[in-house]
Amino acid sequence: MRNEQRREETRAALMEAATQAFSERGYDATGVAEICRRAGVSKGAFYYHFESKQAIFMALVAAWLSELEQALGPAFPGAGSASDRLQELSHRFRDVLASQSPRVTLILEFWTQASRNEAIRQTVLTLYRAFQSFFEGLIQDGIGEGSLRGLDSAVVSRVVLAIASGLFFQGLLDPEGTDWGALAEESVRILMSGIGGGG
Amino acid sequence: MRNEQRREETRAALMEAATQAFSERGYDATGVAEICRRAGVSKGAFYYHFESKQAIFMALVAAWLSELEQALGPAFPGAGSASDRLQELSHRFRDVLASQSPRVTLILEFWTQASRNEAIRQTVLTLYRAFQSFFEGLIQDGIGEGSLRGLDSAVVSRVVLAIASGLFFQGLLDPEGTDWGALAEESVRILMSGIGGGG
DNA sequence: TGAAACATACCAACCGGTCGGTTTGTAGAT
DNA sequence: ATCTACAAACCGACCGGTTGGTATGTTTCA
Image (cartoon, rainbow over all chains, first blue to last red; front, side, top):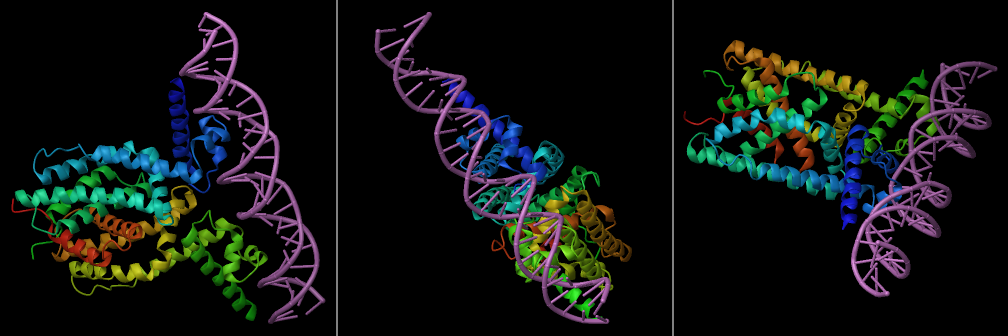
């Protein structure tokens, strides 16, 4: 069964190469030949493992999806109040940004393709809704235990997501502009207490 | 001087056609030939007016930049308190989204290209910083007049921008998912008063 | 008439994808 | 252990089609 290992290795090499290539040059501008060159295999090998260029892109989306779902599921198992956990999450924003750093532009590529390809859009939407549900549950917990005000959790969760993705995209555009990690923490703090004055 | 008018018309037709084509199919997937077809001119006309495909894209970025700068400058000349103006701005989010609707995906295209092209990135960054300055000034006004708390206006302005762009990108991914305009209004309301509970 | 504005025909380069053939790995027979 | 037989994995030349860009000719108008 050593073929199985070889199979996995080649597949992994192709996906890694595709990740880098798509990140650097974008989906359309990246040729299958270049992916093969980076992976050190031939075009024949590529089309043996993947039906098409679209197929490997979809595989990358799926891999990213399951990876983040795994990271989201068992994590943060309810230690402390909901507001504390929200702060903790914002604290980890910098690490997430750093760990995803090579893929940051790839995620933007996912987003772009999603706006033009229904299948990809549905996949990304699934991920997006998973995130939203996660935050919605967190906020409902907070409302239940009294650490958060009794606002519409669906709305608040979307706002939290908007801040997160907004900071994400801004960091992509201007990586050196600010300490986006610190800004994420500050955002949650501001969101918690509001910006309204005395009146 | 009727040549001048003709010149402007062709140029405008090409840029309008490029806007639509880039929006629908993206920069790379759009051919120069298709832009010409939509504009009803020939390739010769295209390359008479623009040096390259990149050039017309840059021209679109520049046009978008100056357009939004104009809309931002004289607009909202300080009627009411800063918090009121912030609410008013969120109220107009739906209209902005609607008016920019044909270009929404084009803006995403700008963002994508910006992450790979330094010249485009600088241009988009200029726009981004113009927005940030605008909000920063607005928030400083609010702090001065007491309608906003004395927080770091640079930080708050970035958070506001994060929410705006975050909602923008989310609306792009899932146009029918929610009333993003209403959500924008609600976001500002939440941002004003915070989500923290009794403690 | 001459310069500006546009059209037409064309090209080299590249693209995603195919295909006939070759190597590699391994299960079973001996 | 070694040979056989076969399938999985891989190679790279090749194809039709498309692309951004050019070269050259034609129209329009001051």
